[in-house]
Structures are given as C-alpha cells and as structure tokens.
Image (cartoon, rainbow, N blue to C red; front, top):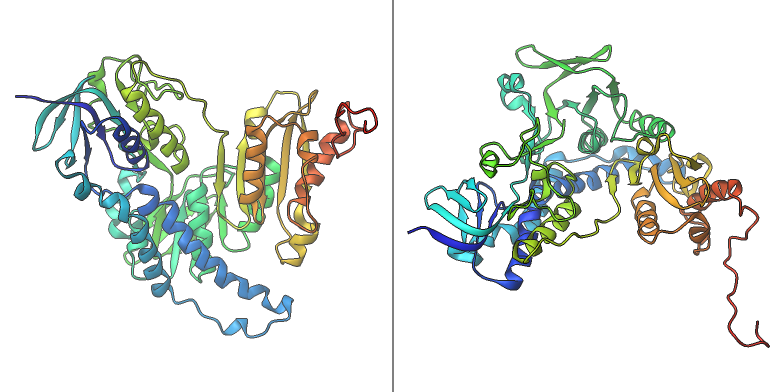
Length: 472
C-alpha cells in the first residue's frame, strides 16, 4: 500500500532545514529525504569554512603593516597551514553538527536516499517505494561546476567540496573563476603564502559591475596575486604539474581550484513529470514570492532554483515554501532587499540595484575614494571605492556597489536604508560618529544631495511642530 504524507521535503540544506522548521509548526506528518551529506553547503563547504580560512589569512597578512605602526618582528612570523586547515575543519564540524543530527532526531521521518518526482503529488524514494503527498518541497541544493574534460586531471582539480579536506595546501594554485568564492579563496591562500594566479573569462571580479568600483577592487586583489582576465582559461597536463593559460599569460600550478560557480542539483529529479514547461536549463518557472511551480503543490527553494544562491536567501525561501506547503493557497511574501557580499580585502558588495541594472535610468551617483579617508588611513586600510545610486528627481536610494575596508558593515547599513525606502536626505539625517569608516558614506551622500532640487537643506531634520505655541 502506498504511503501518504502531508509534506515531503527533498533535500536537507539551508532551504530544506528552514522548510522543515515551518512544516513542524503545523504537522508531524512529513518526510524529509536527502541523498548524501546532511550538512548544508554553506556550513560544510561554502561560506563558513571559507570565512574561517579568510580570518586566518587576514590575521597573518596584518604583519605587513606592523612596521608602519612601529611594531617590529613581523617578518619572523610563519603560517602553519596544516594547523590552519585543521582549525577550519574543527570549526566546520561544529557548524554542521545540527543538520547532521537531523536523521537521528527524526528517526523514520528522515530518509537517507535518492528521491525522484513521479508527478505533482508523487515521489519515488530509493529503498522505500512510491510515497504520495499533499505538497512537495524541492530543496536539493547545488554542486560545483566542473567541466567534464577536466576530470582527466584527477585530484589535481579542486573544488570547494574538496579544498578544505586537504591536510596542506599545494605550493602553487591556479584559481579559475574570479566570482565571489574564487576571489575570496584566491586572496586568502595567497596571503597564507601560496603562489596563486586567478583566471576568468570576464574582465570583472566578484561580480562588480560598476567600472570605478571594479577598478579599485582589481587593484587591491592584484597586490596579492596575478590576475588574467578577459579570456577563457585552458589547462595543459605536464605530468607532475598543470599549466594554466589565458588572457595572454600562463601559470605553472600544482593544482587548480575550479571556482566557476555552482549548478542546481536538478538532474534526475523528475521535473519533466510535472507537466509544466521547462527552459533551456531544464528548469520550470518558479514564482519568487511563493516559490511555487505554476499552480502545482510543488515548491522549488534555495540553490536548487538557481535564483539567489546565498544562505540567507535559501533560508528565506525554505521558510516561504514550508509555510505555503501547508497553506490553503500560496501566499506571496515580500522578498528582502538584494544584498551580496564578497569577503575579500577590501570587502566587495552590491546592495539593491547595481550599476548594470540601472543603465538607462535617470540616476545620480555619489562616490567616495577611501584612499584619503581618515579612519582608513589610521588602520592602514586606505583603499577602495563606494558608489551610491539615487533617483535623479527624488533622491530615493536605489542601490550601491562598493569595495571597501569593513565594507560588510556599510553594506548592511545601506540595505537597511533601502528596506525602509529612505532617500538621501533621510540617511544624511542619521547619526555619523567621528572618526569612523561610515563618514566616507556621508561624503558620497552629500555629493548626491548637492545635485538634488532640495540641495540647500540641512543634514539635520527640522523639528516638527509640537502643538504648544510657546515651544514651537
């Protein structure tokens, strides 16, 4: 006899675990099915171990500023990479402990197996058979993109799935793909003493589209490693080493880190059985506010839908899918302001709409070069650029791109301002302490304010009438 459940969740990553949390608020009549590791991509192989490595690399790199501060002895410091990697794994194991305990905690409601759709309400589970459900949540995550011809190079081709398992780092690494993860790891490894070269078919790094910000970021990254941008990379096997060439240069490497992004894990999932059109990537159309596929009781959340492959977005999408799976009709949720941060040095970020998205619109741009910013100079971090975009007539904030020291904090401040629909005058009216990095933001905002019709207004808000004649 075929089993029936209220909800089946396929996948136990950030989106799947978030969906599970919402489903359990209403019912225990569910199954969560996962093939492979129960740790999330972020915690096990992505944002968390990479940031642990970056912190070590940046701490070691600070020795280069010691002399400027009047501190001697920095040249005698050494990075013990095996110990650093062991710490990364120890921290990683703590981060993944909770999701890996899901099968033990849920018992028979958690199944370690492959699952495939047979239709909008039917799932074939390996070793179990067919199970029907009122709703199905697909949260199967993503996997690193690895060109098939590169498989012949064996374990000399690394991905984020394998890099952090190494007992030590190779002496020379070529990183192919200068998106967020590629930039972060290339710079971190270079700062730990590895000889690194970065390759990308695009001229940009970390997805920065603003030309001024992109230039500032490239200049900073180039201080740590050689960049070959604007042409596809090719790999030649020399027996014991790999020669990577592209953009007029070449690099002899002991290993290559493939960092060309990730692709949704949808192969073999059975999306073709849903009876809805699939695009050229074999993906159905998904409503970003409900996560629903068409009008079916099927929801596609997290990295698996290929939309916003970031942990906080995956968690939000799991939340939405979990709630809608049990709702009488799908509810549309307002999505958060788009926010993407690359934890390079300087931090790169895009908040709201980026420069490329705003092409053709009537906007004003406020910019600040941090080469002369006072707090940045004190910290020996005087580099970077912020560019803020506002509507030309109203001064309403539309977005920003930046490459700044401590930029992650300014990015959050701007995201909060966009969330509150603030304009330039509103944000200038907020407190700015002295001396702080945020004063550079104020300078950029003042540039925009000077071009607005209300340019003569004070940074301070006017006192509203209080209703008492003697005090007004």
